[in-house]
Length: 218
Ligand code: B16
Ligand code: MG
Image 1 (cartoon, helix red, strand yellow):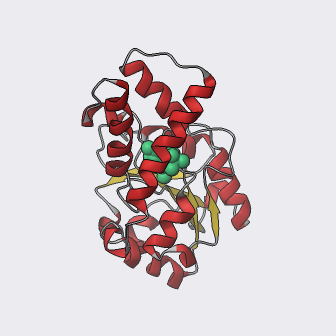
Image 2 (tube, helix red, strand yellow):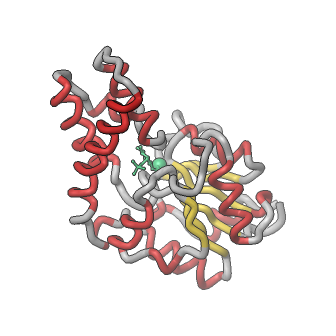
């Protein structure tokens, strides 16, 4: 890769912490089904699609459901989840996000979203961040979940930038794997022991700078 030409961002865990709302919404479903769902269990759902999350939840409760029942449960969970995210506002944007997006914009580096969430547009609108993104690839536009690179490859294509000139920001191991599988560089957001496959790991976007981004130029 030469100079970084585009940055692709995961949403939950990178730009905003929606995991806490996913957690409450899934816990309500688990409790209605008669079992508990812990914060530790919730870690397994990060970056995972809605239906796969439900399969994990049901396996924790040792339950099996028909496809029809599963669809009804997933819809109920999403209705629960929507009541929380519709109350979100810009104050929930994770530290340093807006500043870093501004910096990229100023440098002429393109910006896209690559999220598994089907609610990504609603969330970006609530956070008033939509206008920063030249391309938004979310759970409504992909058929293969991370670690498949589809979401990021579609983002690069929409931006008209080659994958090798893209840097992905991800908080989930499967997301880091997706970026690498797509031939992109990756900056992990979180802990180096979990995101060791990333080219660089930082605590959050508040720790990012153009200098750190340029470490990925070659
Ligand atoms: P939805 P990301 C992911 O977002 C979440 O991390 C994951 O917990 C969730 O199940 C998934 O979105 C689907 O979300 O139910 O809103 O379609 O990290 O890929 O931005
Ligand atoms: Mg994430």
